[in-house]
Structures are given as structure tokens and as C-alpha cells.
Image 1 (cartoon, rainbow, N blue to C red):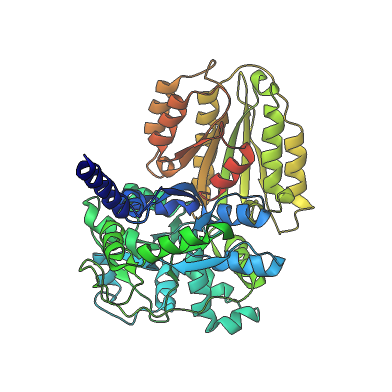
Image 2: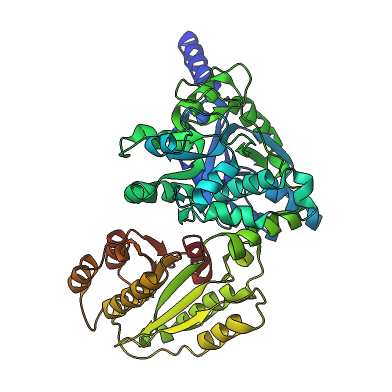
Length: 522
């Protein structure tokens, strides 16, 4: 009996050793949304270390704001890079991050259709510069997709690299020498924007016949090339001046969890995990000696310097948003039916829209506000549709001009009547398509917010017939739907899918945060 008991104890000891020893530890992680592709490896991590990771996904700038604001209770954070967070921490005299370890690498580069690379003389060339790319974009010979740098880390990383390349050095940037004209030339070719690198990749697939390429993480571009979804594979261009590489650092937020953090990091840097990570995500290993996966290009990555101050980074972002990127025309279709008068819903709508006029001064708020040169149309609806109210933003003084007039308009929103969703949406497409025909250089998008189901005017089938009869260019205008109150998730999902947009759920998040998220797609 004693021998049997001893054998059982030995077996349990071996099992415990294989699972990292002893009881499992759970660490909560505030993680960038692009890290969802690590999900299949979490079980392997837990088995090897005894550390269970509970990942809560968030946009990197949203996560940065959450940490800087204080009160966050996560044990760790894991973003594609932490440079902006570290600079904000230093500027504000905070100690948010107690330890930082890079885990994997993915440079942000340009993927161009092979035929386009051949046409531009870039195929097989290792000497393509950011100036070459800007010249092609300005001449209308390169149309590309990139995420919004004010919302997504891949676009942010690319923008910092571009600004550094055009300035010649980080010192020049920190001295305030931002070459806005060169940036304007480059981004004249940006024809698709998005709030996340994953959604951008999906949208590129939908729009690939009218685009020439995409700026994104190397790993995303390589995965797309292997997906079978592309009509033509992308040649990866690594500009000669250099790029900025995301190094995905694991950040320790709670000093009391250091022992578990150290154990976790030791395994994440092990050859076993680095190889599994590389195979699963197509990101590069940070551990020396790990053989590069044959699917990854053998490239010498020239790293551009990163600005040293928050002031410089903010200046680069505002130069892009207010001067360099093609301006937007955003149409907001707003439900002001009688049901919006209950449970503070109309007040939430007023607060969300007013925040975009400069009243939200958080990290995410200042970059999501309405931008210089932007045109805005607001279409209210209840039992019927009201005429559009239009504004053009001129300048960046949020206390005057269009910003003040929009706030006055928003304050006047009053709930009344039924819910004619499709009538308002049809009017929005008429208004936006007409504007698009007049000025095709802008980004056009529609935001539909409703708290109920359609009970007046045309139905979903009528809208679908109307939409399908639009000119091809007008059908490229995407609708981003906001699920609020008692709205139909099915109906709003169908609208988003039909138009190539995206559904945002404001039932579990504030309407203000949802509207800020949507700004990344406009």
C-alpha cells in the first residue's frame, strides 16, 4: 500500500513539475488587440510555467490612456511597443511600468502588389526610399491602405518612421523640423484608413482591386500573402532610410507579481517558445540563435530613431491629422426618436459628440476630435428624416468656429417620434454620394446610431435595393453602425456587412468611447 501511495505521489509531482510546479498563478494582462493571434499559445505557456494569462484586449492608445489615468488593476500590459507610454510616464512623473522585456519583433513596412512593384522599378530593389514612395503616391501611381496613427499602433509606428526619415534624424524632429510637405505627398496616396491593423487587412482584401498596397506589420502582410485571399501577392518594401520595429514588450505593472513575471519572461524568451511564436504569428524572435522561419525575409532591419519627447510625437500626429492626410467627410445619422429621451440616452449622445469638439482632453480624446479641413454632415431622424446640417472645420481652435457651432447644434438635440432608420440611411447615402462626386479626394464614411428598431418608412429590403443601385464609387462609402439601447443587432450587423463597415456595441461601453473608436475609421 505504501509503495502504491508513493507511486501516486510521484506521478502527481511529475505532473506538477510539467505544469510549472505547484498551483497555477493567474496574471491579468491589458493587451493590444493585435495579440489575439497568441491565443493558441496560452495553453502552452500555462503548461510550461504554471502562469495562466488572462488577456483583456484594447487598442494601444486606449490602453495607454487607461494606464496613465491611474486606477488600472491589471498585473501586466503587452502592447506592440511602449515608447509613447514610457514618454508620457516620464513627462507626468509617474511610475506605471516597473519592468519591461521585448518578446518578439515585427517591423512596419509597405506591401505592394508585385505588378505595381515591377511598374515602379521596385521589384528586387533594396534601395527604395520613403521619398520614392512619396513621389509615386503624389503622382497617383501608388494607392495604399494604412491605419489611423491616432488610433492604431501600426499606423502610429509607420508615421513616426516616415517623419524621422524625412527629417533626417530624431534630433531634427525634436527641434521641431517636421517636413509636412513630404508627409503630405506620401499620404496623398492613402485611400483607406482604419482603427486597427486586423480590420485594415480585411478591408484591403475587400478593396484590393482598387488599391496597390498596404502599410502594416510585416507579420500581417506575410500572413495575407499565405492566406489565399489575395488576387496578387504583395512584395514587401523595406525603405532604405529605415523603419520602426514593434518589439512587443511585456510590461510589469504590479511590482508584487514580479516573481511570476520573471518566470513567465524566462519561458517566453526560451527557444521553444520563440520558435512556436514565430510559427504561429510570423513575428521575428528576439532570442539570439533561434533560426529564422523560412517564410520570413532575411533582411537587415535598419532602425530609425524614435523621438525623445511627447511634444514631438504629438506634433507629428497633429501634422498628419490636420495637414498631411487627405481630409475626411463624415456623415453622422443620429436617432432622436422618443425612446432616446429615456435613461439618459440623449444626454449620452450629446456628451459623446461634444467630446469630439475638443472637450475630451484625454490622450485618446485629443486625437479623435474633429480635424482641420474636415467636413461634417449631421442627419437627424425620428418618424421622418430631417434635412442635413453641415459644418466645415477650419483651424484647430476648439473654442471657436465650427467646433462651437457643432456644440450648439448638439445641445439642441431633442427626442421625439418614431424610428425611420432606413429612410435616414438612404438620405445619408444621397448626401454623401453627391459630395463624393464633387470632391472625390476625401475619405467618406457614414455613422449610424440608433437605440431602437425601424418602425417607419422604408424597410431593410428597400435600402438594400437602393444601395445596390448606387454607382460603384458610392458603394465604397462604408457605414459604421452603433448598437445602442434596444436596437437590433441583426439589422445593424447586416447594414455594416452590406456596406463594408463595422458594428460597434455601445451597450457594454460608453457611447463616448465608441464614437472615439469610430473616429479611427474616418
